[in-house]
Length: 154
Image (cartoon, rainbow, N blue to C red):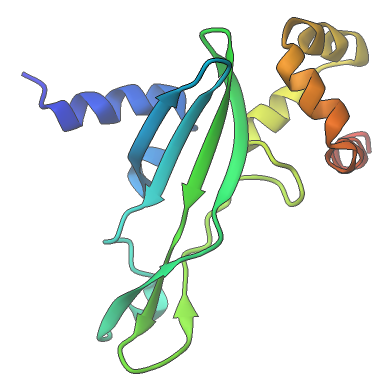
């Protein structure tokens, strides 16, 4: 029989990119009127290798990262990620794990960005017509659009 934590992790593994459930814990899942917001927090036991065998303490969080992901049940999905910081007790320098979650300058998960990249212009227009929320984001954040097009139209 499944425990509640097992079921949550199993469901989350279907929603977020592969491997993320090994790194992050679900802190909230909210369905709003027009979107889903998922909040993930890095597990506290994933101490960076550089300080693993030292006397370390938690030292807050890095700046939160918000990424778009594939739509779910007709609504866009936003994943807010909080990565932890650690430090050696008595020292000021912080350490964090490097996670390769998105392409630089692209506010989408790698899998979602790769999906959009794989669409030709007509298919992209069709996708954006079917998902007006994504089209509004696409048109609103022109700097994101320019970086995305530059990166993927090489």
